[in-house]
Length: 271
Image (cartoon, rainbow, N blue to C red; front, side):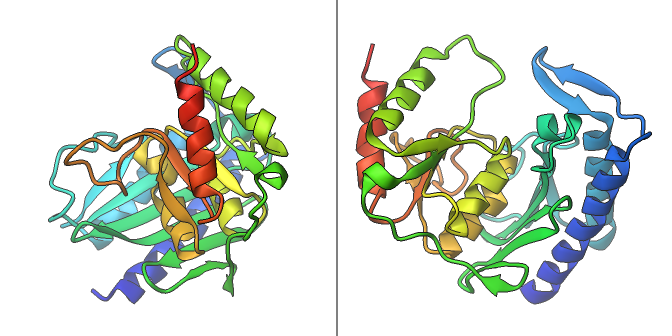
């Protein structure tokens, strides 16, 4: 099937999944909450939306593999360079969703032949759909978007996130401290996918964090297609594909990338 048809399928799937997210969160709906690993919130809506998306993909593309946060979380069960597969986060921003905040999104990416080809991030509460196909630019509700071209690091608005598991929190605090010393301010939407897409649309200037693949796969492509430099502020291990490597992501424009990378690396060296 042509990639254009797969993208259309992914767009429609995101819209339907978004409708399900909203219905699950409606007043009067019974949303059950639990915690993975004792600290990571997951709701019955996450499970329901994940199952819906995976069912629709399996029905339309039974030969494709799936990596999804709730149903198929293992990322190393197949060769990413030879397998066509989907990367799904049913609700990115679960804590926001559970607390009735409107910054949550469904994230859907498609990869084949070792490249993420399609990225869709859809916030059903604001009706904003961020999309990209590799080599064809990035869009918000069909209109082209580009990263901000800010060069002065002192004026940069930086986004990041904070881990559920906090036993090794000191390096993160060091990084936040150094960013605040050098940059204008920090923002946090509570959804990594939306943070990165807001950067792609020029609403934010920098994003950094360690994430899971489903948190950033679609948004990273969208940012890249919007002109962002997408990399890492630590070394990527030999043999690891940077587009799938989850630790120490750094996404910003080409002017700020080396400056922010230097700041974050210096912060990591602090004791």
